[in-house]
Image 1 (tube, rainbow, N blue to C red):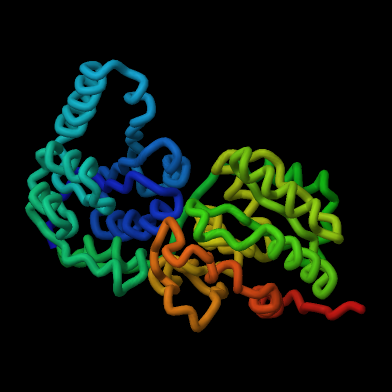
Image 2: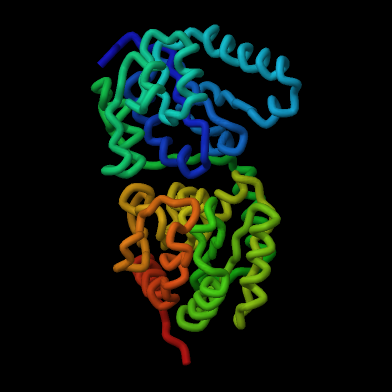
Length: 356
């Protein structure tokens, strides 16, 4: 294991869930190199995930959208200036955990003596220390940690770590008190969002699930949302439900994490909020179809995943449905998800009570 690393950069540009699943890399680097300066490079949407990580010296933000507003030559100048900024920091080692053409170029032009990246096509030329990718065989947490293993850096933890300020938690605590929630009863969040439409369980199914959780378990239902489209979806779920449901308040990413931390359970499509809930130690029921839970499932103890077994196309990883029917989501029954939710609540000491 190299002892000379004094300045380290980790690159994971996006997305929110992927950055969360990279956080164990930071704690392991901090344990191996306690005196080193450790920085993290990401894009604006994901920056709050690592903003308060205690191992980090600096979060460097690559704002491509701001560059897109510039004239062509100004964009080029901004790009070269950014790469020069990285070069001037004189990193001893750069770990590119993202592995797309942009992150590979940033790694190469950092001029770090040790540039670690995955053996992907032409991008491999940007690195001088190659990692054999196992993304089709291991969970993404271990995929990220393989970059450290390749340098014989010890893996002492695999725990996710997302930290927020006390002020952020108090803002959510204030909303929670205003709702007068009875915490003797389960408080369950439903998250219908998902980056691809293929990952989204029908809104009507979420509404039926919310009603069953309220009836069978006495649960209070909170409908989560982030964008305006997600807010419309949450409102539609509430409209279809017979039981009352609360819409979550408007939140930024940090406030959303603090809210997720207070839930007894989150039922969610495969998405950033699902991984954030797991990082905040909230139990999760993850709904899967085109993605594979053994590779991208909720990380940690006490979680469950559900999927429509028997479909030949499960795990297709498609952003569109190749068979045009979206069977993996359309055929997944409410009862299957409900039973997984009940098990999670029972394991958390919140016994599901069947009501008439």
